[in-house]
Image (cartoon, rainbow, N blue to C red; front, top):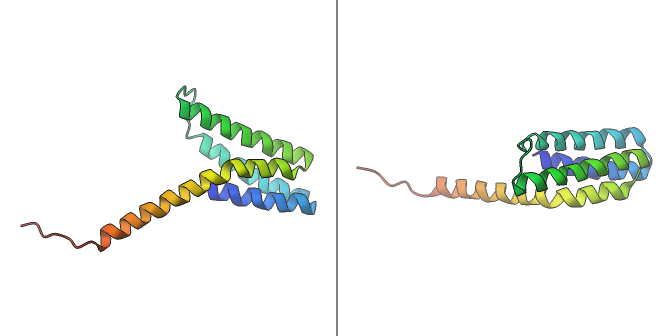
Length: 115
């Protein structure tokens, strides 16, 4: 859900950037940054495992690009941030769809009576 909000906010920010709507761009990028912050809270502080380090680095890079885009009105930085986040969003959507399909399959399967 958060990744979807980030993707939507970044896409909106690209449009606002191209339209020259500074205030709307700022609000969209702020919304994306806030969601990244919430996701980053899920990383163990000082975590030294590979996942924690790489995920923290990814989030830091996206936040850096958002800051640059906001100060320079740079749609290419927003586009790069979007390209980093979009595959994660798609992967989570695919997992959710697979989980939902499994749940529906289990519900539709005949129940065996236990004697």
